Length: 439
Ligand code: GLC
Image 1 (cartoon, protein in one colour):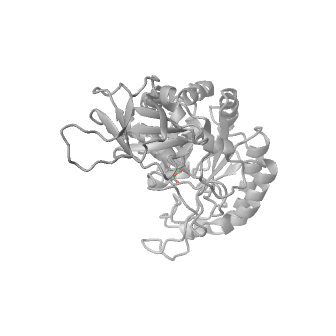
Image 2: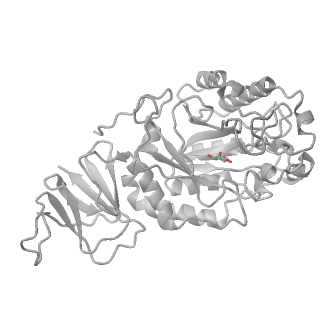
């Protein structure tokens, strides 16, 4: 069994750490301008102009069952959909606002269809809910708000009562955790400090954190409604998940005070945007996509990979191609991801490889980020391996113990090497994986 002990979580994370891989979905009115989900504030778009998107939002090609099938085929075991992003528009039929998808040409509860379809495919259900709301009349204007540079911003801000908004959030989260059956993940986003530099520093525009969100009450209510639910850390109150974003940690994340290993999930995008961004071209290569997943699990984490569907309701070809990269690799190599975690300390990864190990400790996976010539020499593995094969096709890989010796007499030898013989030609696998059955 894995020797790694992680910090206890209030929610049930057992299925989560076995699942390892999920789909993030950023979908909202911002999919219409198709210039990033922060377009309203980046471009300081007025309510009147932004309402055009509300007026014409019509995802006529939305088929949540197709989304769910693609997620499942890609090897994803759970999904997290934006029920409301910073723009404040609700993708569900909330009775606390008119700013919702049922009042647009969409005319239906889009979250409902997501829940039904993904649940039918056996995926766990997650809701992203933005703590930020650039539409709500009680949400105080701050340095991130689209109205921050309006000449009358301060007057606009008068009367805005954060307590009214915090109650609105509780009412909506109650709806989400009551009306859609069992919800497995609640993903809040995000808290921020008052700026201490730049044009808005130390002025009347204030940051927002756990006190403003009334996060203790919000979380208590969520756990009363959905006892096992997994909640992230972005309310500023530690819960189940640490959520490193758009970067690759170098080690298993530890608790700042106690040093304990924590449960963590990296969230990343296929391109440079969470929401659909037509003209954004920084789409990650197939190798990078696969390596990011392996890197994450090799450090004991989960990967939440994001898709931004179009306003018509389908995933564009670039997203589909990226999902198919995962589908092709996970179909044959998923065993090195699911129910796996960081390798035990005794196993040191050779250069240009990453290791994962099954939770039961019986199998070790060597992911070849660069394909070596003729041999893979694993120091310290001698005497520990019973059998070796390529994972993708289950073909045996012969190995010897001791060292590689060919006209290198007299050279110092390591007698604890495991030397695996490799075919000269790299298999047609984005990242080949060697499965080692341990003694
Ligand atoms: C950042 C982005 C936000 C996105 C989130 C996902 O906070 O600003 O738009 O939803 O990351 O983790």
